[in-house]
Image (cartoon, rainbow, N blue to C red; front, side, top):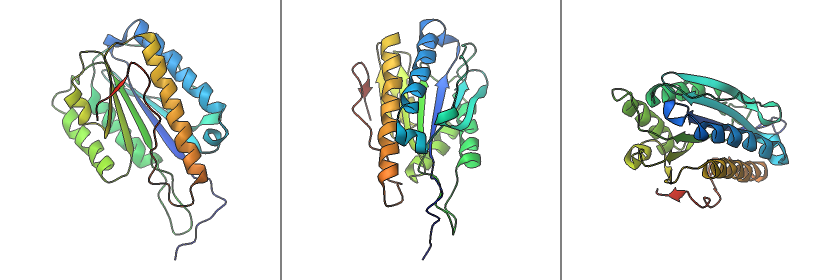
Length: 225
């Protein structure tokens, strides 16, 4: 029987994969910047999140970029995000997969590994890297089917094909009317989701691998899957 080191803190890794392509110029990217700051502020005021949650932010346009490597919430800061370029989602997903392999601590004979990661994907357009995104999405989907990650994908606006979103995550949301208020409400909901999951993690006596108990989605956002 494996005996785990009870003094080790298990982390709840949270990944944001955010579209910063040219179509996000103006009010949308301003709302995303406000929303991510709201997210950080909310989590820094939640004791269970401070204890367990770590945050990583990857942005994607023509090339993906790690805006914030996986960092404990208490000291996490995010740069101001700027838009421009194409929506090369496949490259961003592959960067995410690499970070998951690099970041996530697995169980060992002496220590419990991290809790199942929460991954939130937000985009307002369909992928432009048509030759690569589907294979990358399939790899991410396989992790979901193996219960190795919880993936929530949000599509913003009428340009997003819901069938694309369904290839990314087991939970798919759609925001038809994209306004600064609805974008900020999404990040508020993300913070609530992390709070619920971090509380569940801190109280769990088992593995915690069953996390995800998400709050109801806010007005203006539709749960389609």
